[in-house]
Length: 71
Image (cartoon, rainbow, N blue to C red; front, side, top):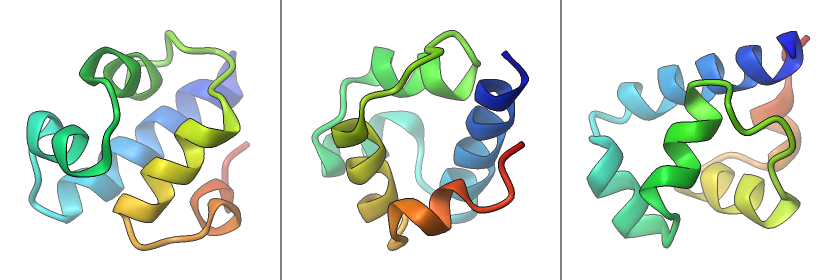
């Protein structure tokens, strides 16, 4: 469970650093708001690779960069 909470916190921190709300980020990157919210809040314990790719692309990162430092 700790891994997903850390990933969620990292995603939220990086998204907020872009200055984009959850709604705008999801709209621009074709991600369901519920999906991203669940990831950020640690409820999605097994995000799909496609979801991680979309999040990473929206943050202008690779998936590897997105996951860097996640416990």
